[in-house]
Amino acid sequence: MKIKPASLDKKDLHELMVGAIVPRPIAFISTIGKDGIFNLAAFSFFNGLCLRPAIVAIGIGWRGLEKKDTLRNIEDSKDFVINMVTEPLAQAMNQSSADYPSEVDEFKEVGLTPVKADLVNAPLVAESPINMECKLVQTLEFGKMPTGSTVVIGEIVLVHVKDDLWAGDHIEISKFHAIGRLGQDLYCRTRDTFEMKRAVLT
Ligand SMILES: Cc1cc2nc3c(=O)[nH]c(=O)nc-3n(C[C@H](O)[C@H](O)[C@H](O)COP(=O)(O)O)c2cc1C
Image 1 (spheres, rainbow, N blue to C red):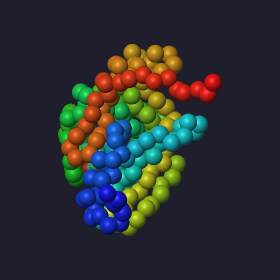
Image 2: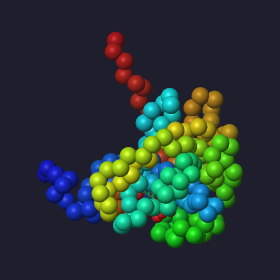
Image 3: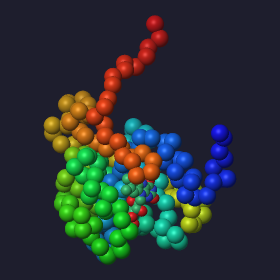
């Protein structure tokens, strides 16, 4: 089977991409609107791209002819926080990603606690064990509304890590319990790991 992306409708192309590109990390993004209202939403078209500077990218699709609140808030305030999603946060993350109107504070709506960040205006999610304060570097637009996306490129300026997760030089993956996104309505846990040393030429 060979499939040209251009030959599929939006729904099938979405399933092809999200089913093939797995597992995906989830950026649970907190932002603040012009009106001071806090916003939360999940994005799995997300990854780290560069170490120094510490760059991340997130693909934010458009909601019909409108920008999603997260994108609008990032463009206005120039900052955001990525909160990593663990098993206990799964339900709240999913709930916050429903289409709430902009005037709804999604922290209140899903029962999470906003905490003031050190270097950005967006709040941290207290319940997440790893929060990354990010400043907007640039946006890139691909395609046209309503099917296109804006890729947000940000620099991580401060990382908050729960003390028991940071072993001095690495994250203790066995204590993290992060979840990942698959296709359809599926997620995965990160408990089933195996070790493989990096190959070296002898
Ligand atoms: C696990 C998960 C991953 C998601 N990934 C993306 C994504 O990568 N890009 C996107 O545009 N929407 C994604 N969504 C949908 C947004 O979270 C959803 O459109 C949300 O309502 C946007 O909220 P906002 O308007 O407050 O920004 C995802 C939803 C979930 C639950």
